Length: 258
Image 1 (spheres, rainbow, N blue to C red):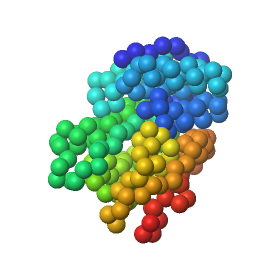
Image 2: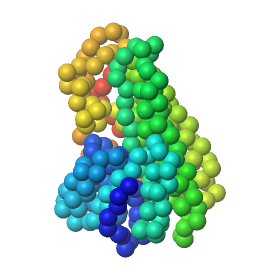
Image 3: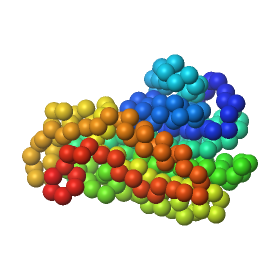
Image 4: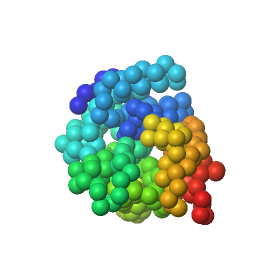
């Protein structure tokens, strides 16, 4: 894992999966709102390019950290560096995640299942665990954790068992963290995102499987709308919390029968 730079402010945020897509938009929004932002992911070149771009756009330093959130040792090192370099952590955004190829459930390999669970669920748990330890010990105590749940946290797409299972589980992690963090001024909430434009949703322009067996194009939204929502959630005092919020393309087939 590599890390460069340092922060001198106390308003510190960490965004996992912050090098591209929704994570990049969230990092940009937080940075523009006055947060000092660290972004993490597995690809050094992508992270460093994003950090340089966002720093130029917002005028605030964005700190790139290379780490694999599915690897316990990597996460331990990540948070050791956050603690040493930044001194504290006020906000963790658990955004990192991957999806599985849309194949029938019985054809999903164990390797694909394990990769999705590791990135989406184990990674969020490990980062939350370390954030709890840091937020409990720091002075002033406490902080906020925001999990990317996706609308798949409530409603699946066809052929998405690994992704949907992890996103349903994120809801349980969010609620448990909100409860367990309550005595320590740690607030935890979840944002369920529907069709924010990114590399992951680019295929929707060509059509994706629907519950009725058809294939159809779906609308997307600018990820900036998601970033704006996260900035709002992050800006609340710790005695207030958005437990769940859904930000979605209005006309996507999610509510009702689609």
